[in-house]
Amino acid sequence: MSSKLVWFVGLCWTSFIGWNTSSLAQDGEATKWFKGNLHTHSLWSDGDDFPEMIADWYVRHDYQFLALTDHNVLGTDLRWMKYAEIERRGGPEALAKYRARFGADWVQERGTPGTEDHEVALRPLAEFRARVEQPEKFLLIPGEEISDAVGRLPIHLNATNVTEVLSPARGETVREAIANNVRAVADQAQRSGRQILIHLNHPNFGWAVTPEDLAFVAEERFFEIYNGHPSVHQLGDETRPGLELFWDIANTLRIDRFASPPLFGLGTDDSHDYHGVQGATPGRGWIEVRADKLEADTLIAAIQRGDFYASSGVTLRDVSFDRNTRQLRLEIEPQEGVAFTTQFIGTPQDYDRTWPAATDADGRVLTVQERYCPKIGTVFKTETGLTPTYQLTGDELYVRAVVTSTRLHPNPSLENQREQAWTQPVGWEKRLDPR
Ligand SMILES: [Zn+2]
Ligand SMILES: [Zn+2]
Image 1 (spheres, protein in one colour):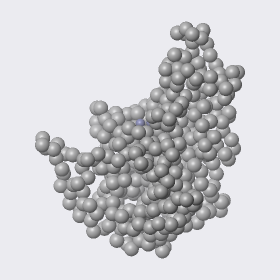
Image 2 (cartoon, helix red, strand yellow):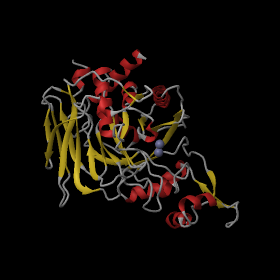
Image 3 (tube, rainbow, N blue to C red):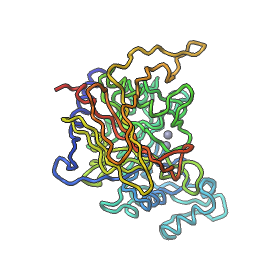
Image 4 (cartoon, rainbow, N blue to C red):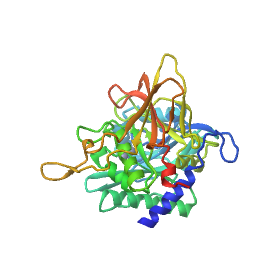
């Protein structure tokens, strides 16, 4: 474990220093922001629409990339599905909408309509991608939601840019299961020569993953700071931290106790429902990635460097951290009649490192936020306006920024949800490698 950990930290460090204040990539190509969602379900697992219909939704809503990530399936072969099941999920109009958009010639059916043997084909990605992809405008990336479990705890990780389906790697504990799945993805990346991203999904879903778990598994560098599914306990509960504090607890432990880089946070939809306004609908959360071209390996390399941010509605023109002046600076895209508040959040070096385990009446350890020093996740500064900056003093373990708009989210997963953006933690690099 320890030699692997050192290797991994070294790798991450090397790649992270590529990010500087320049808006030019290392080869001098101009960079831009690409918007995408890496968590989407279709009829291939438990979604309610055809994959090409879903891709078309994202094209029409100005996304530049999308990963269809069904549970433990890649959708590489054609599969026949009972029409009755399609109608049960998507309603009586689902097939008609599919025909209307892609043409009756494209839709493959067999059996007699109105009988049990009426089936419709789910076409594989290799067949339909040409119908929706456009060079430099829209890219589909092969993906899968590896849906593992430890006992009754759901351990879900999304693998993006995979070549072959990955079976859940299993483990005796949550930490072991996460580490085993990350290792399986690293193996496939090495064999295939591709960049493959693996991120931990919705940690509070089923209350499966604690901040301590994600601190301990140094090999997992990514998690969902915002997932648009309404059942993922984004805000925690009275004893368990919401994802903002979750991120700060995990990052504090990672940097200070395990000398490993912090987690980077993604926004995703986890969309399942495409025929109405109820449920896990698309368009709630995404990432914006800074890269020089719309290509899977390039996008994932930028994500690995931390050159991206998560959003549920706020757009940033720029986010930069100058490692010499140690200033973090954001430039927010203005919106008519809308104001923005930015919080710079982190943990100071002098936080209290003792945290007695909180237990219930039976002595079982609880994951409760009260047991942590309240300095974890300190708001160092709050600033309004379009160009908030934070000057690091050297007293911080790390700093990250959260921008909150006065505009209500047009398709919220939470009550009174405001549009937001989350940037990645900075200022931790020197501590891990003081060269
Ligand atoms: Zn999931
Ligand atoms: Zn999912």
